[in-house]
Image (cartoon, rainbow, N blue to C red):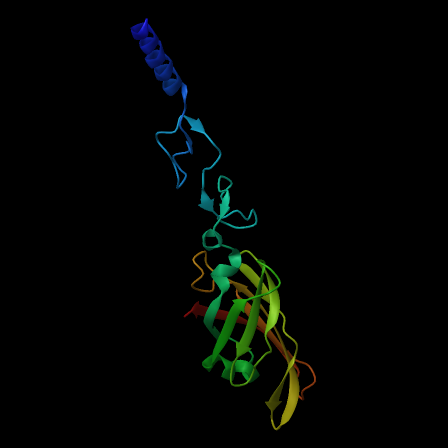
Length: 197
């Protein structure tokens, strides 16, 4: 009888142990994947970009990784060296000058950047600009520029188009320069070339 009870006890223990399932993450793409798990316990950790507005959004990610998120603004941010090709005789001296365009992170969100144009003649305050993928329209306030001993308001607006690696401006990038209240009113649509440092 004792042997029978012992055999029954061993049989019950064996059945109980064979019925218990190991729980864990069964997703092989998760960083905590458990290949021995019999039952998924919902503990899988998949890091990635969880922002649906990002270019690198990962709908399978359940743990935010802000480094994984990339936005159009990331292609723009940096310091750009720009050169103009104005055709108006009065503006052709600008063709030999280099313009520095500093593009920084904006506090307005992922579709905005902050721009500042630096040059010996034209300097603008930093302004927030909305970007449209690989195109940007920049219309800063007028700046005072000395011309023939007097200061005149110079208005500029630019359309910049960059390549998909964010390293250079593409054809179609232009800066329109107008001086309306000077003795020589003028407007010129100057093509721009440029590269990011």
